[in-house]
Length: 270
Image 1 (cartoon, rainbow, N blue to C red):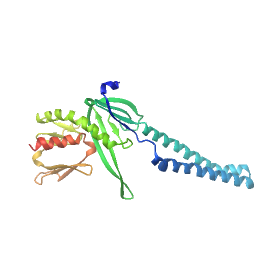
Image 2 (image 1 turned 90 degrees about the vertical axis):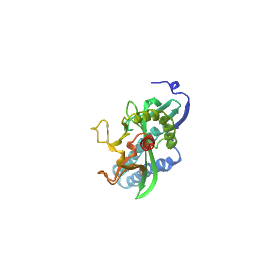
Image 3 (image 1 turned 135 degrees about the vertical axis):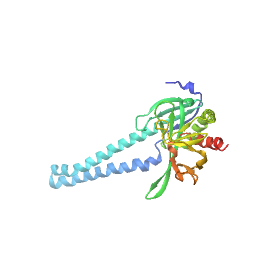
Image 4 (image 1 turned 90 degrees about the horizontal axis):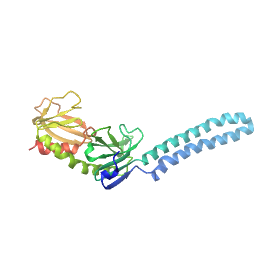
C-alpha cells in the first residue's frame, strides 16, 4: 500500500452523493408511509376484531398487516444501508495520482481504499446516456471507467458528486502523460489499441484485438470521416469501398477517446 505522501499534495476530494433533501422525498417519506400505514391498519383490525370475535381472530386478521409492515421496515434498512454505502465512497485527486474508496470490477463488491499513480493508469473511458420515462427523456446519466495497467477496471458512477469535473481533472492529468509515448509509437508504425479500436499509420482495425484473432486492417484511404455522435464513434467509409457505409462503436468501450481522435487528426491527415 503506497503512502499518501508519494502522491503529492491533495488537489480535490470528491465524496459520494450525501444523504439530503432529495432522499426525504425518494426514501424516507415513502418508506414511512409503507411502514406506518399497514401497522396502523393492523392495530385497528386487531382492536375492532377482538371486541366481537376474540383474541384468536384478532391475531389472525391483523398478522398479515404486521408482517407487511415488518417487511417494509426491513427493506427500508437495506436501502438506507446502500445509501450510506454510496455516501461513504470518495475519490481523492492528488498531484501524483488518485486515492479511492470504491469497489473494483463490476462495481457490486465492497469498496476498499487503494491508490494509483498516474503512471499506473492506462486510460479512462466515459459514457453519457439519457434516461427515459414513458418515452420522454429525463436526466442524463454519466459514467466513467478507469483502466489500471494491472488489475480490474474501476467504475465511477453518478453516485459521486461533481462527476463531470472529476473526469475532467483525471483527463487533464492523465492525457499529457500518455500522449507523447502514444505519438512516438504511432509515428514508428506500431499498432495502438483503444479498446475495440486499433490504429496505425496505414489504417485501423475494430474488434477486441490484440487478445482476439487480428482483424484485417482497413486502409485510411477507405475512411471518409470519424466522428462522435450520440454515444457512438461513427466511422464512415467511402462509397467505393466494400465495407458498410457506417460502423458504430460505443464510446464506453474506447478508452482515451480524445487521444485517439487527436492522433487520427494530426497523424493520419498529415
